[in-house]
Image (cartoon, rainbow over all chains, first blue to last red; front, side):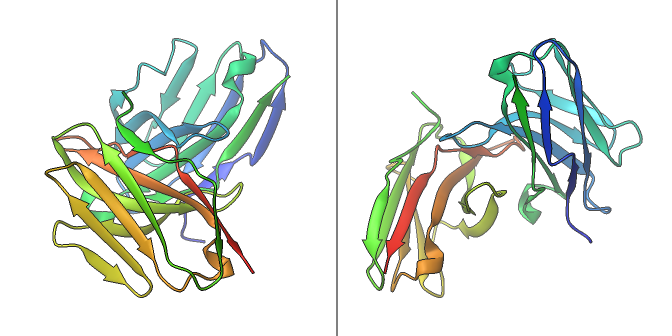
Length: 113
Length: 110
């Protein structure tokens, strides 16, 4: 499979717990993006990496959120002390650059109860 | 004001009809424009890029009006399989992030 892979597909967690999601981009893509999508809305940008460097973070990304891409390959998104408002679909995308298009993974659906 | 605005719909259209969506963007520095399609509970997928000269791909035609800062998508001879949410997306110059509209939900009725 040469697409963008995200794990897990679904996550149900209790409020206050920490969760971590993983994204494996297309192997030759040096850019990796995280988005969040809630019902009835378009995806909202969270952060992006070029290789291992995190180049931009949205102000939506509170101190409870952290993302890493330690070796410029896969990335993780961690949410600490989850809140019900964190319930959303978390989408990862990868790209060679804006002119080359973006490929999205199937997303991780988070439900905080 | 939202950076990218779309009529959320829903648009309920009979099979075979022509349907058009518009989208407006607020940042005049926007440089790249796209339409993405998103099926229910699936990831967004690129439908087509939008060029200044307009472009066509089969039954789909996209146009860009920079002066009025809007983008359009026309679907001719609509099929049941066209039922989806259509997302208008822009990239502001010097930037790499995609900025999405809320999406327009389309249902094709047999």
